Length: 231
Image 1 (tube, rainbow, N blue to C red):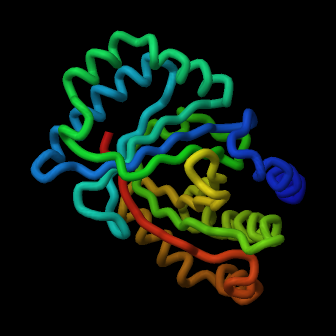
Image 2: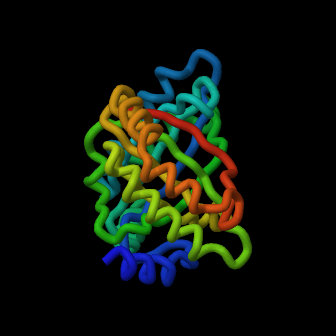
Image 3: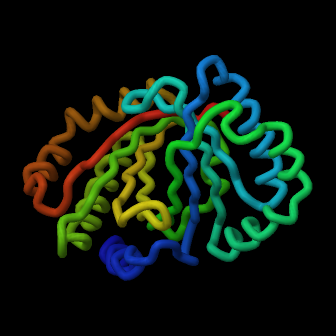
């Protein structure tokens, strides 16, 4: 089954967006000095509008690997069709016009990056992220001609990591990115993350897996960070 899943994944990862699974848009923000609480409040108000238009919204705060006052505002949909329907409502929305008047551009913070992507697991839905969680993200770039090998390594690692108590989600970048992969480890809280890391450290299966993969052969780790959902 996992081999068939790998074949399927490798057939779709070259698409910037896919109809097959969860579609995401991620907006990274940096609060202006002294405006953290107000920016989060604006996010909460924006999320109410976005969710009325069909999106699921997550508001996250960076931890290690981020900068103070940095946040992610994440929109999720179950399919590309849902994404298109939701996005099409923005320009004609009186709620967004009112929101823009209340929060002029740059008044509370600056958007520093934006990115779209697709989950490589076709079974995942936007509602699977409703509960609060903490996470760590490793961003990988495949070496030329090594994309399938890198994805195969991801799936082998996923099986081991999830056995230690984590939940693994793998995303392929779309608009705003350049084809990198985001390997996301999700936990209920920081204590669970620590337990999972300890289990992984002590795992002979993980040690064997690491020994079987040549570092840097299939791809390279380009960045990493952790964070938590705050709303």
